[in-house]
Each structure stands twice: as C-alpha cells, then as structure tokens.
Length: 241
Image (cartoon, rainbow, N blue to C red; front, side, top):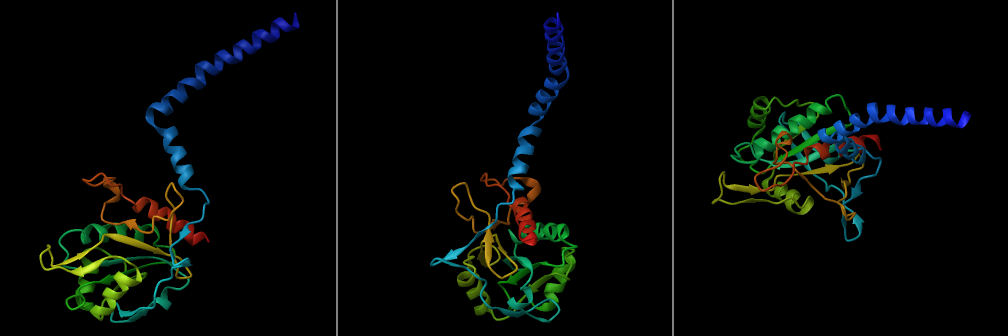
C-alpha cells in the first residue's frame, strides 16, 4: 500500500516539473539566453591574461617621453602602477581614427572612477597636432583629460615607438586618404608595463585588440568582430591583479 502511494507522489512531482520547468527551459533556449549566459560565464573566468613574448622574454613598453595636450611632459614612468590602453592616431584622419577615438571614449567612460586606469594616444602627425590642436580634438570628442594623455613630439621617436616599440604599423603614405597609414589596433599594458592580452583557442595571445570597429556594430563589412567588449573585460582582469 505504501509503495503505491510513493509511486503516485513521484508521478505527481514529475508531472509538475514537466508543466512548470520545461517550458521555461525551452523559452530560454529559443531566446538564446542559455547560450549567452554560458558565453558570459566563460569570458568572466579568472584565467590570467597572457604576456606578449619577444625572443622568449616578456615584452615591456619601451621608454618614451612626449608632451601632452596641456604641454606637460609625460613618460612611460607616469603609467607605472596603472593599467592602460595605447593607440596611434592623428587628428586629421578621415577614416578609422574617429571610430577608434569613439571606442576609447566608451572605454574611458566605463573606467572613469578607476584611478589605476589610463589611456595613452600618440599622434603620428606631430608636426600638425600641437597641444592646442589636441585640446580642440579632446573637446570635439568629449574626452575627459584626467586619465588620458594625447601626446605629440619628435616624429621619428613616435614612429620608432609605434613600429619597433609596439609593432603597431604607422607610416607616411601620400597616396592614401589623409596622407598617413596606420593600423587600428589597441595595445593593453599592465601595471608593471608589460604588454598583455587574452589568448585564442590555441592558447596563443591575440596580442592586440581591434579598435576600428564600433562595439555596437558587432562586426565590420569583412565579417571581423569588434573587440572593444573583450578589451573592457580584460582591463577589469588586469585591474584586479
């Protein structure tokens, strides 16, 4: 007799589960929320970011010293103890720079209360981008200057820093729009001055982050994915180290 009642209760529990729980699971699957949550949990793991290696050694930001938008001398030493993003740009750029700057403004906004975060932007047309011009650029894009230095100075030193120091391409090319060519990449630097990035599916550092695709667009015309969202996530990881 007791067994009979046990079977009845088990059957009722299974029936209630099927009525209440299964439709909710189906709804989450159809909306993609299960997949999305799995993705977010994967991306928010505590896995440390990789180091960029050169000849088997961790690559560090080389020494630099330039003046910023306020004519203040800024060096790599001013960024020690901070997590920061590096890019190369020019204010008259007609193509990717406006997108890159827009993305960096969003990154700055996200970390506006973090005293250990900064941005370092180097002009590849320093002969034109004077501190006065840089201040106008800041006003145009509503940049907050307290943790973001837009720097100008010796042209050869800036190109050396871009091409040899960071291995981020920059060159004078009269035949392209704007007369200069550069990659739309962002470098991520940790508090000790080392270049860092997340790793790909094979365990290799991605090295740089795409900066010329708006985060809200998702992809560009070539199907390349934006990487501002993962850049933000990786900045958070470095801030917590």
